[in-house]
Length: 228
Image (tube, rainbow, N blue to C red; front, side, top):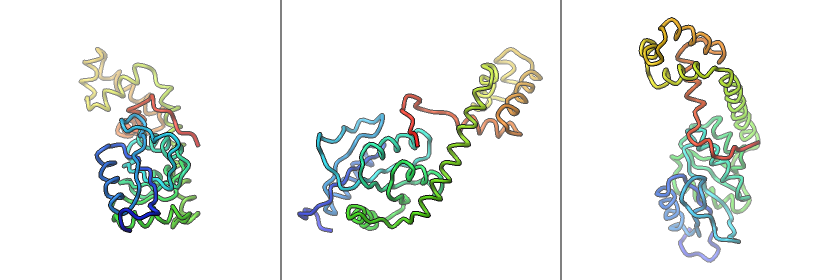
């Protein structure tokens, strides 16, 4: 595809990091695309010009945190165009999240530029190389992961303020004796609280409780949730 062709595809580009967005914009422009950076929730990239029309979109995100998954959903649902998602996340439930939020195709970040260009051209023509079965299976994986997390959130709400404090200190790496000193309680009391935490979270080990806590942390709770 040569730059400057008359029938250039107009692509919206969304990336959390502006430098990546600029690099993708330049790369696609060199292949003849008309490109515009669009807003990433919480980022500094401006919104598209009023009335601007796009043929296709390319979203670039690692999808490695819940915050990024939610933000990508805001972008994908915000512009009703066929979206390709380029991500470092392994094929699995997080790809399913992208499909759930409206992506037409998900590609690994190792995809060569030529293939990205071919994919965007195909999407602009109304074509897609992803089977409905693959999309359905990946979306099911995502829903399962999301539902598990929502159940864990509900369990976490049953923790007392002191139990949450103990769990936070464990997550930050503090040993039981240090927690006891910091909270001015006995080590046996800390162990008793950890037993209650494990029971309430439905896990069988301290490590699993800490991992569950880590999975529930939301770096940006003000970001609007994406609903199915």
